[in-house]
Image 1 (cartoon, rainbow, N blue to C red):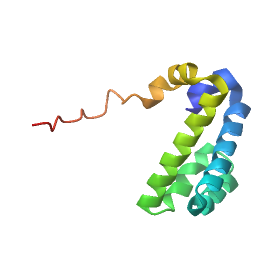
Image 2: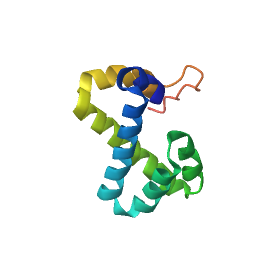
Image 3: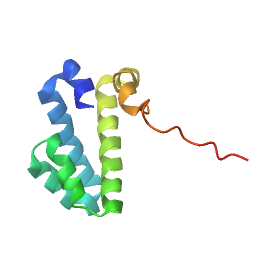
Image 4: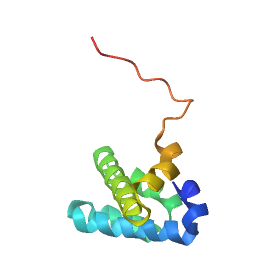
Length: 106
């Protein structure tokens, strides 16, 4: 997301969205406040992996989902849903190197 958004809103813009997303996560999900605080103290996206690695799998997944959803929603309110979708299309689409999902329908 950083790579996709930096040319449009700059590094400081991406960092500001990240910090705001962390703040909103902590206020909307008080049980995640300690993780948000650790991520905020880490000062950057590159340190987020280390913070997530310290969490239980369930907490890490929940935090990641909440953070990404909050970031996406915040970006959508700022630049609109169409532009957000276009800018982040490559981020959300599965990689060609990923194994194809199996059809489990009867």
